[in-house]
Length: 187
Image (cartoon, rainbow, N blue to C red; front, side, top):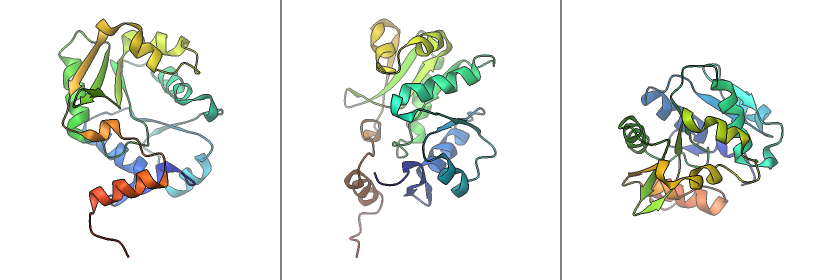
């Protein structure tokens, strides 16, 4: 992207602030932010004092390493599940995350994924029952390995939110996102 995605402006906040605001609105009281190589720049730009902030010393090892750091942080706490929301999806709606939480609370699923028009996306909710599996999966395999290991423990939350299938990885993706928010031509 050329700059930290966490700090990209989106709807009057940054990507990271937008996600944290959504988590607060959902009543998620324990929020963990895992930062990588841009940690100093992000820490200078944002007040993260209300969050648990961790450092991934090897962000190149893949996103699962960050998930593992966060899971280790909550193992000794009474947490039922973890909602893993990557910073490149700030446009996922609060209603989408709520639908995932509701589906989890219905019971029977160790993993809940949102699906838009039949296509699975992110964020992903992992129940405590799979925390140990997440921790022991090699980072190179990713959390996808845990999701695919046993289809019977995965529930889908159908949503009307295409953002679950759209990650913002390039300047072009970001420009498209901003056009969707404000379709007026730019000068």
